[in-house]
Length: 348
Image 1 (spheres, one colour):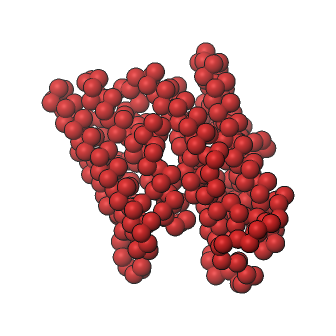
Image 2 (cartoon, one colour):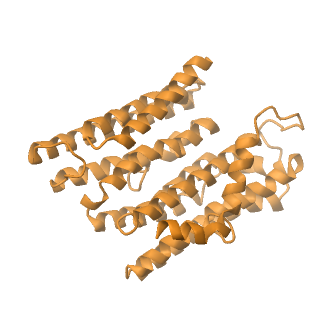
Image 3 (spheres, one colour):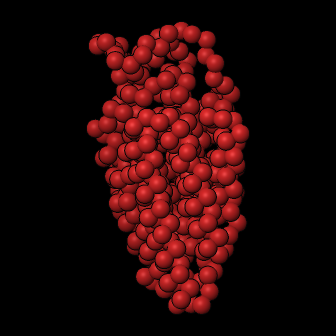
């Protein structure tokens, strides 16, 4: 892609998200979301592969539907209340519609069906943008309007997402689909605690972005998109394989890795709020997710691929890609648990 076009598209992505962050008016927020969608569509379709074009079409249709519902619901709310301000959401129908549309935008269950299919059709770097940056603007809107939503509905969305994210990833062999289900499960963790401690939602989002960036960049570095390709990575780069296994365990939420911190805080908050059953279900759903991360770790570290892989053999050529972002994100995805007391002071 032409570097000038790429720079324009990336700056438009930044502009759209910033516009949504800064707005308290529904029309401006909607405009930011639309700029965001239109900026990532050319990035998704840049390879002109049928799967990429299909994924782009699916993504565009779902995002356009969500944006139309947001526009309709905010207009309905403005008709009822006489103002477009986000903080004044008194119409229950409009509020429920906006939550459904924003849930569709970030891929919360049961509006998650587009997410694995779209991510599977993209290359790893565009998939990284879709899994991290594209979640920020809709999540910002959900956090801003959280007090207007029905608490039971938020809890149901959160629980369903963690369970679907765990169950969906169990039977997958494609790494991008596994990361898509991982994303759905993490979104559930963020939504479940939103009504009690929004600062924990932000903490979980930050940790999710770090860990997902490390996972995607590792897969990009080793050119792996299927599980059986992972079985051949240990001979090419043993250190990268070790850190990749640890990053996956961090995504699963195992101590003493970074991913344990947000899950610990969220379970603690749910227990404080007198919701032990919800906390137990969330912890068990995290175990289901942990199973498929362990399956990937087992493939990477304890197996030698018995069959001839259909993928291109990764020869020991000199890597031309920049490894600094991978190194930074991996270090943060593995080693932030010791600063938990400092973070606890900031978020409580």
